[in-house]
Image (cartoon, rainbow, N blue to C red; front, side, top):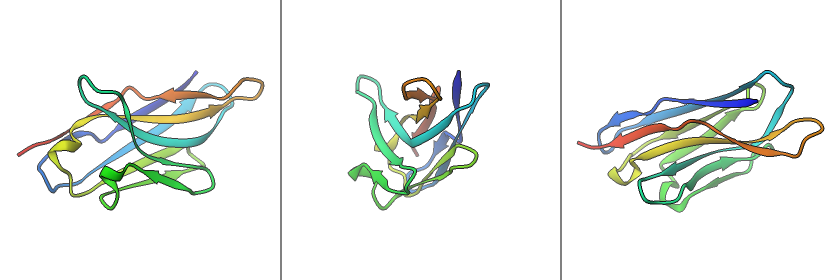
Length: 121
């Protein structure tokens, strides 16, 4: 089993900042290629916020470009999401995602449990 655990969510006023963190751990030998952040609001599908590949390429949703920054520590399989200039429409549950590679098994996605971000005055 490979687990991803997020931290850093909370309540923030519009225009404020938050940093989300996510770390992968497991009792088996594994590695992770792409890591990313998704978010979901009630009644809607989970949507990509940002993802970062092992070669450093990064993809952002148009709605967060220029405000959010994704980064990762490839040695420790940690990924971060710095969120600035937050807007009420950024309110959602944010999920960490990683594409897990285990020798002898097909690659598979692993998800964190989610962390709530509320942007409100």
